[in-house]
Amino acid sequence: MIQELKDNYDHLFEDDLLNEIAQVGTFKEIPAGFTMMSIGDYVRGMPLLISGAIKVMREDKEGDELLLYYLESGETCSMTMNCCVGQTKSEIKAVAEQDTKLIMVPVQKMEEWTAKYKTWRNFVFESYHTRLNEVLHILDSVAFEKMDQRLLNYLKEKIRINKTNTIHNTHQEIAYDLHSSRVVISRLLKKLEQMGRIELHRNHIKIINLA
Amino acid sequence: MIQELKDNYDHLFEDDLLNEIAQVGTFKEIPAGFTMMSIGDYVRGMPLLISGAIKVMREDKEGDELLLYYLESGETCSMTMNCCVGQTKSEIKAVAEQDTKLIMVPVQKMEEWTAKYKTWRNFVFESYHTRLNEVLHILDSVAFEKMDQRLLNYLKEKIRINKTNTIHNTHQEIAYDLHSSRVVISRLLKKLEQMGRIELHRNHIKIINLA
DNA sequence: AATCAACAGTAACAAAGGTTACAGATATCT
DNA sequence: AGATATCTGTAACCTTTGTTACTGTTGATT
Image (cartoon, rainbow over all chains, first blue to last red; front, side, top):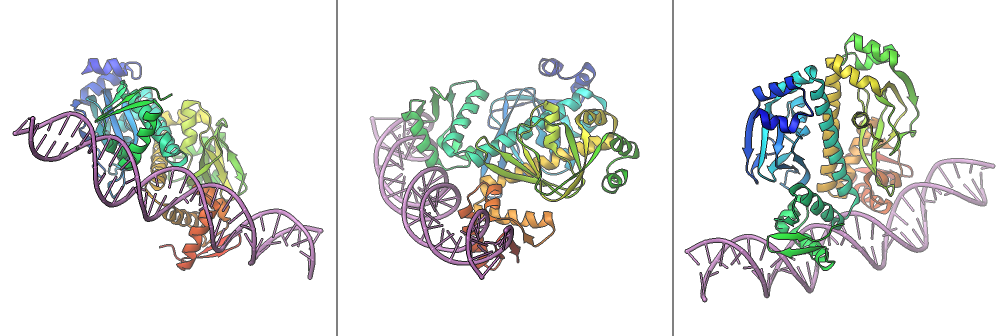
């Protein structure tokens, strides 16, 4: 584990901290599609991503969903820290987008390290910074843009995260992520196909050009 | 200044920190309606609110606005910290909602105190925590709720912040905050009046019952 | 190969919200 | 009081998005 930790966090943390993480952290492998956390769950650990990606979503009482952002290697979840500070339940849902490797750190350590290590402090602040900006951009998207543009952004982000030009999702799944309906998404996807920007197939979409 | 500081931050900060703040901070009084910060401005200081309230908004390229939240006494702006960390320009616009008193602290001190004072660290984390949650709630509102419900939430928050049952705004101003149009807001307000929940007047709205 | 469930395409319609246009009401100022 | 600018009410209409319903297609399963 210490090796995988170094590969991803060496430039961020000093040796002492890396060693502490290796001591108290637990290594986990999570298969794509696995739900790691749901609304209302208590937060027991803070994830440090080694590889893969995690999809973070917001959900309302009726179970309507909205994709917030993806976590990638070298990142952590501010929402988790968020919950630690307030001792509250999770406000988000997290699902593995790909097969993912990560290290789980007990929440108690977070505050301890914040006092002890400058690099950890910076990491935590940087993380809050990034997440806050990401949530703001989603807000911009939802508040100021129409569904066709939101769909474009979604497809772009999806191929960036998964490093592929083929998106393996049904229209219904995309509709959930964007909090829209299947028919609306099919309609807009068909338009994109007619523009020659994507190719539609059953269960997958080939991206031609989204620029 | 030290007295006003103590009145609002005594329970949060230890004496040493209060004294440091008093030394390097500058006291400011800001009249209601004054624009304190616009998108693209560089961030020079971090505000600690003494009294009054500040309205924090998001704005897109076309100048469309959306109210994010209000800052009240005892609070600071995470967006400001956000910008300090990244050395970036402001992503938000801030306007005094009421006559406001605050202390401006140079951004350099922020990181210094984070290492030095546990109470400051907690304050900063707590602040990030609160703001992130507030932005998430706005996102919920925009993504999951219809305009009539959003308008209700808006009116409730407005009377809570301003501690009054009369809202001194035009329909156009409300429309800006909710990123809607004047006609739509007038329409919905009229419905609320017909339900007996508010009374409409020129330039102000009397709240009867929003529960 | 036949069957079946899930997925995608499409039309027709409904609802919410945005736009335009104009009339009338109300504060403010002189 | 009269003039003016601003604000509000309302109607008619448009666009976007969501809903319902049905058909056809595809992939998987037996």
